[in-house]
Length: 379
Image 1 (cartoon, rainbow, N blue to C red):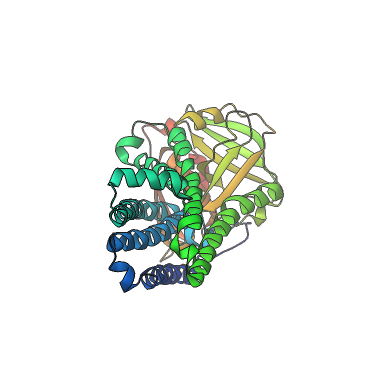
Image 2: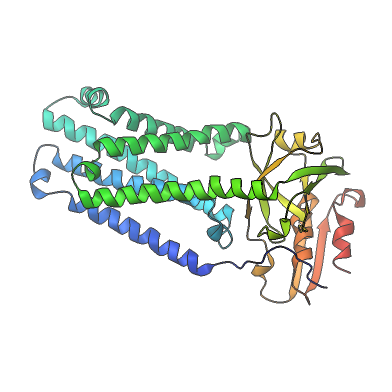
C-alpha cells in the first residue's frame, strides 16, 4: 500500500497546546491577583464593602472565563489537531455554568453592596443602577443574552429545536459578549481606577478578538478565495447519500489529512448563511476533492439539489481522526453507513506499509456506501 497524499503535510503541535494551557493558567492567576489587589481594607470596612468586593472579583473571574470560552470555540487549528473540536466544545460547555454563576453573583453582590451603602431597597437600587449608571443597561442585556444562549444549549432544550434555530440563538452570544465589554469599559474598576489592570484587560480583549477574527473570519476567507471551490457534479451513492465532486485551485496546498472534516457553506439562496461539518471522502488532488453526505436534516436535504457551478466557502480543516493517532502499523477501522466517509479518505492517506483491516456495517450490501473505494485500498 502506498501513500499518494498530495496535500501539504503537517503534524500535531503538542508543544503549542502545552503553551496555550500554561497561558490560560497564568491569565487566571493574574486575573485573581489584580482583582484582589484592587481592594483595600478601608473599602471592605464600609457599609456594603464586602458585597461590592465579592461582586467586583467575581466579575473579573467570570469575564476571564467568558473569554476562555470564546477561545475554546474559536477553532484554533493547532488546538483542534491535537485535542479535537468535540473535546474543546465539551470544555466550553463545562466552563459555561461556572461563568454564568460568577457573573450573576457579580450582579447580585454589587446590587446588594450599593443598596446597603445607600440604605436603599435592593430592587430600587437595581433599577437606579440600571437607569443612571453608564454601561449598566448594556451589561444587564448582555448577561441576559448569555443566559438565554446557555439555557438553549442544555439537552432538554436542544431536543425541542432544530440545529438551525439553536445556531441562530447562539449567535446572540457574541452580542452579549460585546455588551459585556462595553459595561466593563465604562464602569469596571479595573478600567477606571487601575492602569496596570486596564492594560491587562485591554490586552486580553484585543487578543481574543484577534484570535476569533483570524481563525473564524480572515483565514477562511483567504482559503476560500484562494482555492475558489465550486461544485462540479453530484452523484447519488444511495437513496439518502450523495457525493459532491468539487473543483478548485491548488487544493494540494490545503493542509488537510484523511479523516478530517471541513465546515462547508454552499453559496446559494437558503444555504449561504449556515456552515455544516462534513468529512471529505477522498483526498484532494491538485484541482479536485469530494465530500459525501447523508440526508439527515434541512441543510443536507438541500445538498441533493445543488447545481454545478455553485461556489463553496470552507472553514478548516478540523479533526483528530488522522494517521497521526497510530501507535503501530496495524490498523483496524470500523464504520457504518455514511460513517465510512472519513475512513475512505483516511485509507488513502495512511503511511506505506500499514496492515489494514476495515469492518463496515450495513443492513444489506446495497446499503454499503463507497464500498468499492474502500475495497480498493485494502486489497
